[in-house]
Length: 126
Image 1: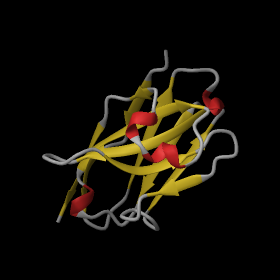
Image 2: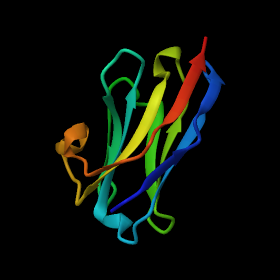
Image 3: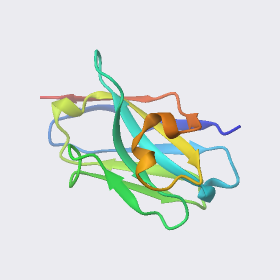
């Protein structure tokens, strides 16, 4: 069983930045592809970004490309989401997720993941 704990959410003005962290309770963290998803009130959960296991190739939703950066530190069992130039439409609960040996476009799909965190609220004011 893998436990994922997100942190770093909060309230920020439009144009500001936040860095989300997701700590995993597993010694084989590098074996997991990691994803960030978000869900705004009244909307479905949507893919934000992912980082593949091992080499760490990344992928982003078009809506965040160029503003958000996903990265991982396998020594710390942690994945990050650096969010810059935040917009009010980025307001949502952000979740991290883990998939064993996760690689490729399947990481865009929430149903592909084995484990989920509890989420952290990000609110961007205009």
